[in-house]
Length: 329
Image 1: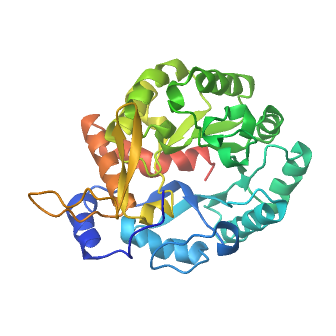
Image 2: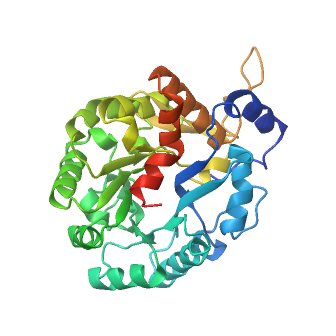
């Protein structure tokens, strides 16, 4: 998604007061969010400094959570395949994770990393798992990469031995409905039960039809979890609650995406991102003022929780308890 949109404004504040404030629990665990230094990524959040560490993260979270205390699973990010950039990104997250023992951080990998080197680096940095990303694969285009191309089995084996978590943003055009993705997820989870696999973006269910089709084939996996990050489709979250169970779903902001202006939207058998500059906001009857993704995303979760008739305590599970338990907080 492009990094468009101005700083948080009064339209966002009014939306928060009307749609979000009374719904959110008293504390938040953000199971998918990023910290970064500008040298590693080349983008920034409107209204924020180029480098975002723990204190800046806390300030930005007030835009979507208000005054609620927020802990997080921090994910490094880099747009470079070079080892030096990945090391810098991982060190940045390590430095800012160590400040609060209730926070966790994971290690950004390349599929060609030596598994024993990864083991020692994660231990040295005091991190708690792995983050893979399709852009590190050799497949062209990377959006069609098999999971094994950017999350190879030897790294899964190390995560299993160490009891780590792994955050996976799967790709391919039909996401969790793709037979190759289903087969790989089942095999990894069944073969390596001591690691915990998190499918990001509600199983990348930006097209919820993919979740409805694929999730029934992923039931019964005790070490499979989901984070909701940046997905604005209520049925994507609702399908996980109903097919897998609300206790496997964890809220996530996906900062910096949370502070871009627009939303994801399912269409046909795929999805699109509506950006602030996308020419869809000036409808004939009125002008629409888009809000930041983080607020749209929370409202989609609100609607999903309402549709599934979750109790207040179950909503608290999604927004805090599930992640805290899974991460040993």
